[in-house]
Amino acid sequence: MNFTKLQSAGNDFVLIEAVGIEKEWPQLARAICRRHFGVGADGLILMVPSEIADIGMHIFNADGSEAEACGNGLRCLTRYAANRGFVNNEAGEVTIETIAGLRKARQFTTTGNETKIQVGMGKPEFDAGKIPVAVVPGRGKVLDIKLITEYPVIIDNKELLLCFLAMGNPHAVYFQQQPVAEFPLSRIGPAVEMHELFPNRVNFEVAKVINRKLIEVRVWERGVGETLACGSGACSVAITGQMLDYTDNPVAVKLPGGTLEVDWDRAGEVLLSGPAEIVFSGEWPD
Image (cartoon, rainbow, N blue to C red):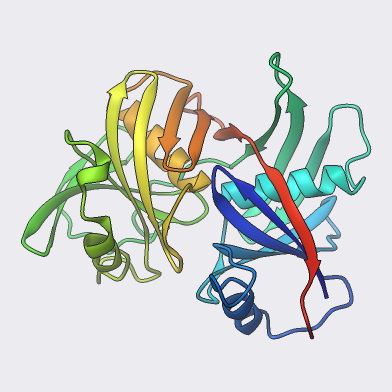
């Protein structure tokens, strides 16, 4: 079975053209994503046929769970599709069917001759029942369009004031004054992910505003652990920062693996831009 390894800001994926192939995909994801023992990746992307889009996409986390959305995965798939000739228009655009709905992406070249991918991530969801998060009415604050913010959660005797939203998948965002490198993410992250507030678990972002154009972020990704980057997480932090009037738009989100740019006009869908690279191709034994 042929595969291709791709990465975006260090968020890495194994991609398989799953046409006419039947597998226990969760089991394969766990095996192929294992560091040292497999190819090694944060997730497994399946490119599949679609009746309503140019291509379809399924993505499985390293633990075998299927994710609803993945910004960096979408951009890696777009880079692969363009490289394989599936994008046959001058604009370099492709539509992708995902569990979270249709997404549109395009490949472009910057003035510095760098290839980047921009993907439409859809509109953010702030309704607690749709995120989902089992909040207690009256706790925390609610902004004008229902963003739940400063919701207190105690983890390991540490109070976290969290903001909740969904970008096709659930996110909890925590802003702090200290550098994000000082946050004990390996200890706190798993507890937040599995907290009883989140019936479908949650992606957890720790953020520090550097200035109105730049946010520094670390991510504990549901079903994966700490990752070098997370596209939907970058979007969630940027949206929250803008709504809390911490940042302007667009804003750069600096992650351990690289920097992504998020653009949101507070009405339409969120646009995520950044690099996506093909690393290597190979063959996985059946």
